[in-house]
Amino acid sequence: MELGPYILLASLEGAVTAAVLALTAVGLSLVFGVMRVVNIAHGEFFMLGAVIAWWVANSIGGPPAMGFAAALVIAPLVVGTIAAAADMTILKRLEYDPERTIVATIGLLYILQQLTLMTYGPDARPVEAPFNQRLALPWIGRTETGWEMYYPWGLSTTTYKLAVIGAAAAVLGGVWAMMARTRIGLLMRATQADRDMALAFGIPVEKVYALVFGIGAGLAALAAVLIVPIQQAHYLMGADPLLLSFIVVIIGGLGSLPGTVVAAILIGLSDGIISVFFSPTLAKILATLLVGLVLVFRPNGLFGTRAP
Image 1 (cartoon, rainbow, N blue to C red):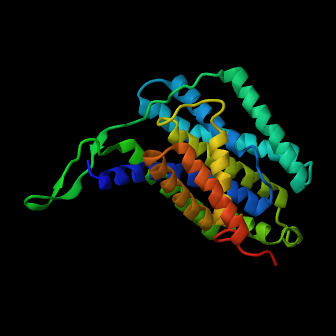
Image 2 (image 1 turned 90 degrees about the horizontal axis):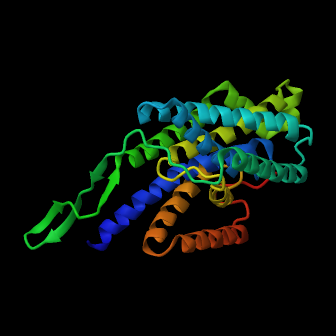
Image 3 (image 1 turned 120 degrees about the vertical axis):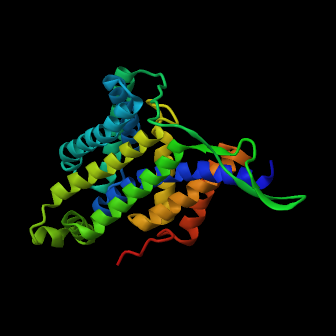
């Protein structure tokens, strides 16, 4: 097979990574943008979404599509509720102080991780995809008779992976519409712009914070539900999404949702291509080096703005 089909295949794998990463990172960026809280436990909310998806799918039984559809609704709601409760019982009492909330979310990380280990166990467990037909992909190449379309051996993807990309794009569009077109989004943007002024106008800032923290965790859980039929649910699976989400948010600009999406596409596609042609470790190293360059030459990120 020529080099071109390999690049196409790697790009498709990278697009799946980018879609899931964008959902996870947008949740982290939303929390920081509105609340100015660095949520170190964000990766564990991702992990919790995958574990709950496995539990729901196995509890319901029946056709895989039924259990997966239920997990797609239940897991983000449960994780979002847990996150909102954590905000009201822990972060609110710390008055959202940046240093103390970092320590608190580190503690929350270990609590969620160890509780999952005690109840779920150390084994990685799969969730069956609702559909997973393999699709052969065409390629146009030059032959002795001229240019023609053919199907190279091994150049294929699955309908589920394409659905993950489409679902992530639809959810990201919904998040943008919520922030730009709804009253809830208006309250979030007002709180983000000036917390004290929002309080003066009677906006229930603490309720907005709880809602934002829950939505951020729910987006991470939704991303985990989408990826768990491709990967497997495991109690230690939150580390990589947390690291990559921080990389994406720093490159895109802290609190910038468009920047986060663009950076997620950049990191996801590069991760897929570099992982296929070289190694996943090299992809992580290059992403970390990119963060260093961004911090040196553009400390506010590619789309970030300077604080007034």
